[in-house]
Amino acid sequence: IQQAVSFTILKSSDPTRFKELATVSSNGQALYTYEDNALLPGTNYYKLRMIDNNNGEVSESNIITIRNNDKVGTEFLGWHKVSANNYVFSIKSAELQLMNWQVIDAVGRIFSQGNKQMSQGINTIRVNISGTNNGIYYFMFTSGIARKSIYPFFKY
Image (cartoon, rainbow, N blue to C red; front, side):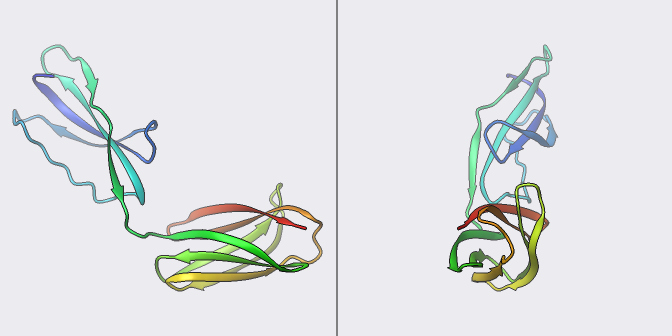
């Protein structure tokens, strides 16, 4: 595009589903800047949507990626069985934060729940699920800005 009316900055956490982040009006300059103060953890995908000043034609740029390696939130490390009904879940936290957790089945019934003040680093949560049958259950936790994570595990 030779002369754009505006540039719309599109952002996504994956390379397919973009949302409008901001629109910058054209001022005839060859260089424009925009600062994204809300980088997502991991890879951020961006592209520009431009509207031609002469014919109104819309075009989009190639996708660029920016990797944010800041340690944010929590990371599920795994689980192991300690005894017949006792399991330990390991979670890495980037910061001091309160985590709420539940053990649920496939239809959402809660078998155990609690909360834990997470310290920075690796934390463990010991869970007893006596009174449940062998099968697949889910360890679900919410931390940070209401980010919910669900991980399957097997009672055997």
